[in-house]
Length: 628
Image (cartoon, rainbow, N blue to C red):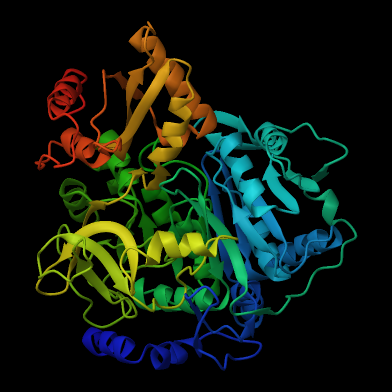
């Protein structure tokens, strides 16, 4: 395949291009309508086709690769390993789906999943898909308040959870967190199904709670329920700049076609290969490239519970690659930075045979040149930076590793646009800028299959969030430029969402928590660059008049509040008391300027600023606090 020819074909006639790609998956009824407009003015792919995502992940493989390993479960956190074949996983999923069906879960119902990285979590997702139910996975690092918001939005019939998760040596009781979330939520699910783990058993509520295995006894294994290509597969909440999370909706048909395309063409994987998505099912990577993508493509997927360091040491990743003969993997740069910090010379990697590894993909945050050079020297395989979002569900830029002569890497770039994505850079007025000129990164409509076209129960919010700023384009929220050869460079977010270790988190959510402290009059939470995590949030706090509080004590209280209400994953650890915040004359806080100050970037004095002297005050305070 030639990149230029393929890219041009997808641009000139997207319907024909993606109609051809749709033939590469098995439909119960092939779609007659390839691309159509939705009621809210967005787009839908393969709306009238009929299929089932669980069938594509499991049933279609039973005759050809039923005895092949589907999931290698590796848990250094619990010193547990398990190999689950396609036949075995199919049996587990069909039986659990039967248990859910007996509880009344069916097509169109929603189910919230709050589970650690154990095989039952994959079973939960696939069982929902088998029934045509819509799952919403909530990452185990979120606090009850955040879970309650998602419960009220998704209104699940059932919650699926486990008794505990494990963070290094620490056991985290999940069940009390779920119980508290249900207490906080207005919507009350009918049941909570609990997978009891031997290292910590949960107390059960006889009226609401069911045991994971007991609820399956006597249930008939469930068959796959046909769904339309446009029917939702899952809801995945991502941070919104207003503080309220957005329930990104992924359809069944476009998702399956896109993942099949990406797995083979972008990631260069073939049936029978071993793939490792080193992430968590709570994030989009876990949906696309731990569970659905690798299984739909007939690969063996690594299902890993642990951390890259201290389980038992910083050689864990290399041990997994060696033990399972991993052919390709995907990881956020922050994991490799953590490994490098513990083992700067890469000595632990030399203990293992890494010859099975063809290349390594990184995404989720900026790949710094130092980490790239370290990995490139250590592994002696291509280290591939690429770019995508929760909203897209699969990559937007990357070399096509499944094709002959994939485009070479360029340091600082996430590579070229993948066929189907017509990426442009525009100024604030929506006018295209010249090559190498920085602006807003947008994608010309229509987007390819697999991209979300709705926010759960809030279609207008989707339009307002992504399609209004630049009519005719999808607004990515990222800034950057495209060079003369079509390589895309991402320079950072243009909104108030920060990226902490690959997790997109809303500063607005954190500001709401910080502002609720009785001593705080107002605040701004901004992202500061961090060598390990990419970004970390920092709070600038204005106290209420007359309040006298010890700064260290206030900081400790605010850190605990954010931890309790947003979650430990926010990594909120620093709060600085300031006399005032820079604002426009209309009273808006100049967050973009604050971000530039903390990053030591040049900035122009805004014409709308109320008082220019405040910027000098803020800069001096940040310097004193060691933030710059």
